[in-house]
Amino acid sequence: MRFELYRDSGGEWRWRLRVQNGNVIADSAEGYVRREDCEHGIAQVRQSGAASVVDMTTKIA
Image (cartoon, helix red, strand yellow):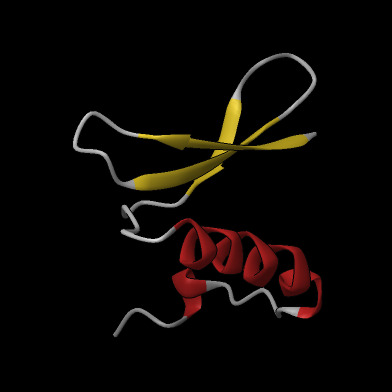
């Protein structure tokens, strides 16, 4: 897997996470004005390994 850091057509910074077969499995979903902010977003995803999984099908009222 690898994170790709790039600029979009509007000049904003974005990231995407690509797996071995070339598929994108996650992306920033928003553009960042500063590269540092985009890199911080990548760091947040890297640290999210401890995030819990919530089955939202059981949360529907």
